[in-house]
Length: 291
Image (spheres, one colour):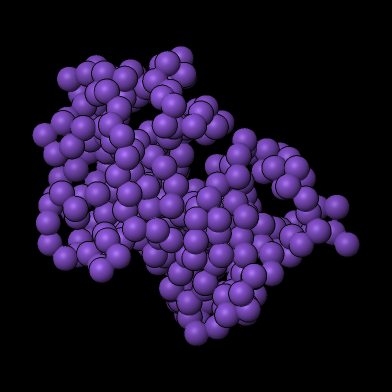
């Protein structure tokens, strides 16, 4: 039988904005290599594949691939997949529970007129984990910036994770629009603790308003229009630095690519640590078949 798929744009309320995603709806029967080949063929930041859950209490098991690797967790695929499932009538109680390699992702479905799913608000599968630091000069070189453009008052460039690793670096507001990834610098910046992957989120902040860009050229993503997993980890990091019990942010991303995206990251301090998440819209685009 052909495998059905749908595409959606996530972290936007209008088609052709946000981050596009392909969702293969009933992917049981596709092997690892075929899923990876399909993700490369789609040539999007990520492609997701819906499978039966291991635990029947959950909505689905989801595998997420970028152009080169399987991801343990990703933000816009989680929200996009949850919205596709909701529109198919497969989400009970207004919350999708998605099994991913990093754990369980909960996505509260947001609805519009007629109860149609219009977006979601996910909680990342793991609390904030802070890893090693990256030299500011190396981070600046990766983004095609001068070392002075990288700000270190709040934190130095550092690896953070809420289920998948990123290096986050704060930059001057006048620098973020000038950033241009340098793939040779990315290769030179690789450290053993990165395990061959370096995804760099740079951001400028004014209070709760964040302007971000994310580059992962070694994985085939020159620039990402919207990165919900990084936004979740960044929100948790900022709460851990700022103090308090909870924080809400708005994040703009993808503007420089012509794919404007609006993300709503948040963080909470819990008994398990600082947890992060992100909300955003989801718009259906087209449907197709493979096989």
